[in-house]
Length: 439
Image (cartoon, rainbow, N blue to C red):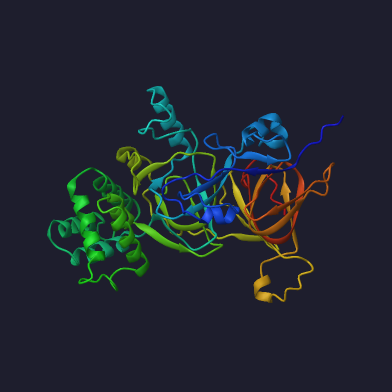
């Protein structure tokens, strides 16, 4: 009897119930009933912290890790596990203000904690693995996020405006924060000013906490309006944060950061060492297969100010948004130039569409797309239904993938996608050895 090699494998996972998750968004996407608890992230990959499981097509109960280990050359990447992790995020409340280490920092930090015997599950553990964690996020709904450092002059303006709206120790603390931003600082001087600001804000002194209380008083008080002095979007976020985190120095630190509003289909790329926090919305995210997080605020979890300051890149981030490229009709790619991952999105329309949809609605859609698969692919359908097939394979295989369903595609011949809907596809990056970027 000849063994049949399964090439298109349905995978699934249970959403992770973090406190910042939405109570209904992931259930609505997956077609399940809400649990009543926040559901924050759906992990679709082979990360040991929460690997996806095989849903059908091969014996159930196997994780994606097990599948890859059963035939690493076919199911793995260069004979090993996946270097990327695909996620769906349902952000009902702000994530922690955080940063991820680069590869060298992660390897050194992990080795140091292993050497002194800090347990992997310990609250004070900073590094769960020796890998870096760049990440790319594409919005499915409107998404708000803090992403990287903005010009110091903008932060100084907002801090002084807030100081003028309050008085007492809090007002003086805000003036102190504005002074830490310097005057006309740029380049290395600006980086050092941000470093000093972060060290002061997270250093445990009462002054930064007084500044946060003053921010809350300034943005919440109806008699003294901050309207017109501070960007309306930032003002709304500050109101939300000072209610949820009335004494959290992360509120103060957030004033140093870009505040973005991403429309559906817009993306942000955050390399290692970039301070950020996602605030609201639904999104697809792909990242290096790591779970290393160092936190600065908006959390009850461990915060290590000294290590955080050591890891953060304090230079200004000129443009956090990351533009995709249309590499074929109906197929957009976001390739930030890291070997770990790239992300594609296809939008499809049926060839016999007689719905009367206008040209504008069909713009950016194709009847079918072909995607190279020299390395494995992880796919999730976010709307409609998509037909996935590999017509050139020895054993022709077809999968009909509905909204909220996910597929693991083994390395091999290209796949063809058709149908009516939208799907996101993650695979290795453009700098991976012999990576096939053909569509």
